[in-house]
Amino acid sequence: MKIGWPTDVRHVAHVTFDRFHGFRGVPAELQPEPALAKAPSASKTAFGVSTESMQCAHDARGNSVPTILLLLQRRLYEQGGLKTEGIFRVAADGAQEQRVRDQLDLAASVPEDADVHCLAGLIKAWFRELPGGLLDALPEEEVARCATEDAAARLIGKLPAAKAALLDWAVQLMADVASEEARNRMGTRNVAMVFAPNMTEEVDPLTALKYAVQVMNFLNLLIERALRQRQQDQTKKQPK
Image 1 (cartoon, rainbow, N blue to C red):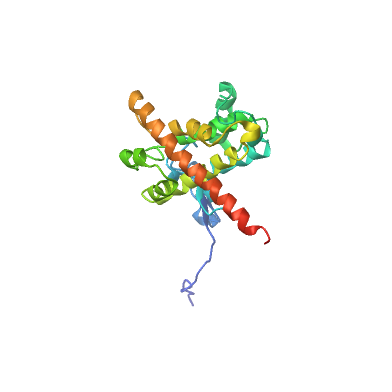
Image 2: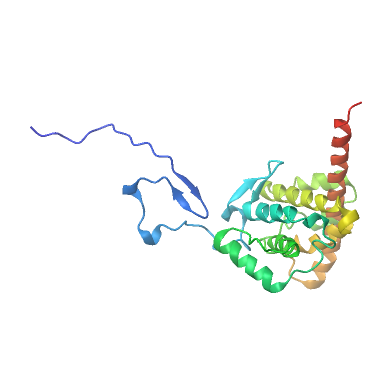
């Protein structure tokens, strides 16, 4: 008597994927060859790639943000970067910045001895090297005409959802810096000034310089709006 193969049999497996470890939970008989087992990431670097190629997580406001930015932000805050004079303005040591970049590319981790100016510089570098620029989807003439906080907020609506979320995260970061102006001497306009050149991908130097001024004014409006909203929220929480 022959016994046939069983039918209607299911094997339930929970398989997950992330950029750094690839597929997890794959049954042994379906495991790829060792040469193919490495995570099939679309990118081997944490810089100069689109957000679609990166592992992302959600910030406190629900924005989907590349994990590398959240790592750099957390370490920056933990090390007192917000209260450091000239944060985001003072240039980092070039050798240390390259070493930290290499570590981020290799293991998606930040070395313990990373200086706050290095962390801040890498955040700016990430935006500067973002393909297509964060704000390049916005019509330049509309950015130039933007003169009020409400107009700036409406303009954000013209960005793709992923870039709008990134901009919101960046503006909240800038607002955190500006809120410590008494210690770091970086007010809203100072912060907007150092971030502006990193938000677009203009090739021509003269055009880039002119547009950076307009982007600075646009960012300044958004930072001031974020700070005003925080103040209003704080006022609402106070007992009457």
